[in-house]
Each structure stands twice: as C-alpha cells, then as structure tokens.
Length: 367
Image 1 (cartoon, helix red, strand yellow):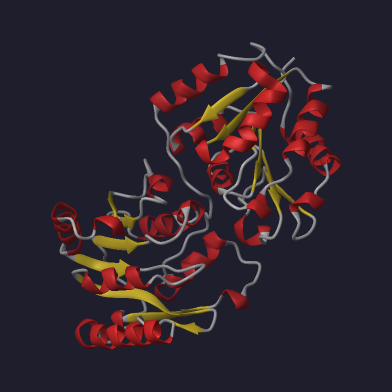
Image 2 (tube, helix red, strand yellow):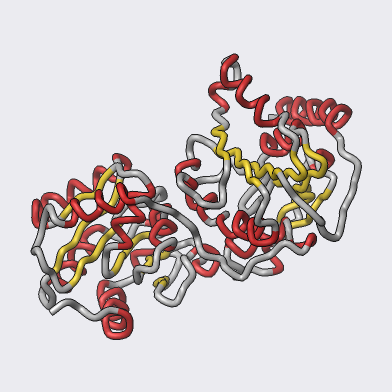
C-alpha cells in the first residue's frame, strides 16, 4: 500500500506539471453554448438525481447544448433524457481500443464554453483528468468534498469546496447544485426526469392487460430487490403486505426487477405464480411508463426508487441505513418510511397504514 500511494503521488505530480489550470472564478456567465458534464463514476441513482443539475443549466441557458460523459454502469439513467443533447459512454475496459480512443478524443476536443465535474458521494480522479483534457475555456470541479482535499483540484479553473456536513439533510438533487450555485445557476425543480415514448407506453399497456383482473380497483407495482443487502425489506413482509391489500381490494399487482433480483423474484413466483405480473429486464423508459400507469408503487431504497420518483404516481420508499432526506424522491405524493438503520424494523403494519393514508388522500379506487 505505501508503494501504491507513492506511485499515485508521483503520477499526480507529473499530471500537475502538464494539466494545471489557472484559477479563474467568474461570478456568472453571460452566454454558454457547448457544455460538457462528466459524471462517469457514480451509480444509476446518483446520475438520475443529477437531473436537477442538467435542468438548472438548461433553464438558465436554454440554447446551450449539453454533452454528458457517463459510464456503462449508469448511462441508462439518462436514456431519452430531454436535457442531454449528446451522450458518450466512458468504458475504462476499452481504453486501449483504437476505435474507443478515437471517439473519446473526438468528444473531448470539441470546443466547450464550460466543463463541469460534479461530486456528491466521492470525487473521481478519472473525471478530473477527462475534464483537464477537454477543450474547454472554463473548467469547474471540486476543490474538496466534506473536508477531504481533491488531489486533482489543480486541473480546474474554478475550484469549489463541497461540504455535505453543512447541510446533513439536504437532498442529493439540491446538493449537486452546489458546484454551479456560485455562478448564479439554479433551479426550483429538483425532480428526477425520465422521458418515455409511445412505444414504451404501449409496452406498459400491453403488459398490464396480460394478467390479473381486467378492471381492478387498484394497480400496484413493487420492487422487492436492491443493490445492497441492508436496503432490502424482508421478502416475507412484502408477501404479507400484498395479502393484506388483496383482502380488501380487487388488485392487479406486478414486480419490476432484473437478473440481479432473481432470488427474490423466484420466491414471489412460488407464492403468487401467474396471479401477478413480472416486468423484468426492461429499459428505464419502459419501467417509468409502467409505473406511470399504476395507482401506487412500493419499493426498496434502490435505483428503481428514483425511476418511480420521476413520475407522478404515489410512492412508498422503504429505507434502512441511508438518510431518506438525502435520497428519497421528492414531491407531494412521494412518501418514505424509516424506523432505524435496520430496514427490518419497518413493520407490515407501518406500510399498510401509510398505504391506507395514500388511498384516502391521493387515490380513488376504481368501482
């Protein structure tokens, strides 16, 4: 480990010699045409929550063109995103391929008025280096995050100190704007944004007509998986909750998921069989479309939670160790439950009570 840190510091010194930028911090920008945003290291939910950043820029500079560099792990969060004009997927495993390098060089060498590297959970050294290599007049990036110095801050003209400790309950879609707020770029709309087309809508409609009652009183979607084990509400509690709801309503219910949720989905299949639907391994716009056609969506704290947050459908999000004030979807029909760091502490009764509240205040079941 000491030798690795020594090599890392040596590389940083070499990069500093060739990639340093002179500090220049304007109070505002009169006009912005081409803008490059680099957010290739975070997960799906982080990128989806970046919609407020894209929206703020477009609201303040409606004629600008935004190019985004994302990763194979998160780019699908912005497919069909109305704020993104061009998307480049940075795949580090292809870095030695001539075709990939040619494409990357083409993107970086375009003339940009501004390059931005946002940071919320961590600072990406790769993103900083890509920004330094971009053909941009001004480069904005983190000087530090939560008191931890960015060793590559010298690559930016505008170096911003980001400190979530000052606002411990700030929502991620609000905090991400800290990188551009010093320049007067802001928005009042913090919602996620996912667009879906007629084909996505038809896919959702056909799916909902393929199972369950034709005219149910309620249509409810569930996401029972999660990328992290501490974020998974016990599957037997989901089953008990569904049985309680079915005891009172004619119910059409389905489950979203992917191959990563195979264990949970198999348990659900054994319990409900063909009585429920399984909307699996679909595109993000398709998932947004199916949720928008539902009366309610109940989900663990995971990426699909943010997809549901992008549509107006009432929603219950279940939290364990994560701070919901930072990450839960925002909006008048978006609710969350958290009892402690252990998601198991949320009872079926807790969710069922909130379900009844939402039914009474936001949903009129079909006759």
